[in-house]
Length: 480
Image 1 (tube, rainbow, N blue to C red):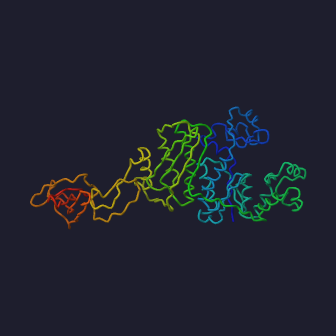
Image 2: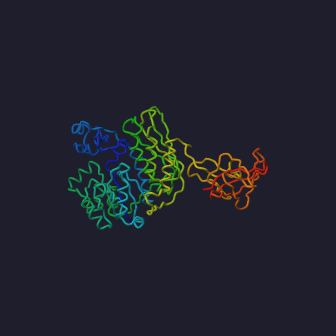
Image 3: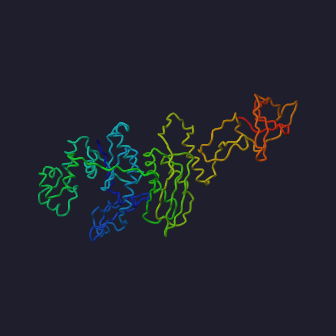
């Protein structure tokens, strides 16, 4: 087995600052309560450059950076972010475990060949995470705790086998064992500073001084004992809510949080092997008020870029009813969508189906639901009633009729007759046999017609019929 650990050192801050399009532009820090005071749990790049560090007290942090914006830690937001990341991670492997470090543990031993080796898999993970807005440190090891500890210490090289892993773990700090204050003082008195020193101590004496859980953690990391992890189970529907750090009054400012949610949704859909045609966005205001924005797609999709394009289109020119405090994305209707191959032979001048779907989705979201439609066949013999407006991409019953013209006149045009032949700027020659339609007696729109394909001397082709009740010719459509 081989485990890939994804450690998120700034998750406490990044799950709170989803509304910042440039998260490092202003100094930000997530604060947590430690005893009687508040301390810095995580900070962004601007705060780090000003001297702010995790573990500092709030007063010291403000002394170093007067412009620091402190955000209260939200354990619920962190847990929701980790669950969303776990769902996103299942596009790479079905075995994804959540660790409170905060981290994800992915068992990747069985999928390396599919992704073309460890290097390519890690590259895909590293490239996919920045659009989500999270900073991450990754590492690999044969044991989940070993991979986690290497990632927590920033050792990205990892280890492919147990001897290499144990050699690297032995140099890591003892603080990874999460000892109590009294145990940490005892370890300092005994001169213990590295995991390798603790591993070499007699087992019984170590357990008596530092507890069973610390010894088990060493055994899990070194591979002496199995370390079973509960795999995260994907929910049946996608629901993700992000609280904003401050009220947003302009719709355009919601693009950044939309980007994260679209990327998470795309990973969720890929893991499920599904697509969707409808996204429901809920903008939460104060006092329990909320407004909803629905996005419709012409065809099922799981492309984050397509979702984000439609989200931008929806927000363009939209006026918020009130400042937005949180954004929620719900996707209930999932549709099967297998692997999608791309045609690398397409020239730039050739429109792809995917591009058409994006265009139709943008038009519908800009013009309103129902403004874009495509014709769909219905079970009716009378040509003028054999179709209806449908959503682009909606599948209807297949037509079992003979050839029909693409251009059907809204009202049939009566044709004169010359030399016992119908005339339309030229004499028309009837081709083939007649298609008789005799129906509609129940709704007072009785049709008794013989349809023919006709052609003129110019080469143009027409669809004409002889009304058997009136004994007159009519033009009903044109063939290309």
